[in-house]
Image 1 (tube, rainbow, N blue to C red):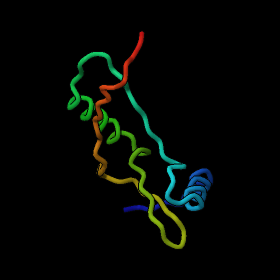
Image 2 (tube, one colour):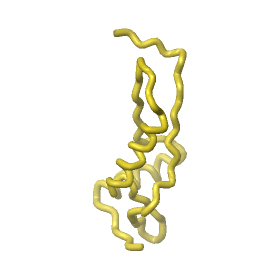
Image 3 (cartoon, rainbow, N blue to C red):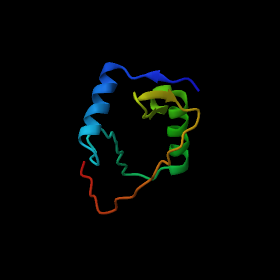
Image 4 (spheres, one colour):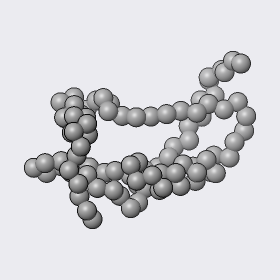
Length: 91
């Protein structure tokens, strides 16, 4: 596996995360709301395929004397499908 140094912006985010430990200061998330039925399994497969094709989304970081990064060959995260039945969407 080939390791790379962090870019300056990545190093800045790394330092910020180290300073604000145990917070979600650098988390990214998203949500999609639907009013109709959908195929959750098909959606999960599409997201997995997208991540597999985008190496930037498979970056992993390791800490040593100097933090480094590498591109993972595998997608280790589970993609959760959550249902919020209490949310009422208005058109």
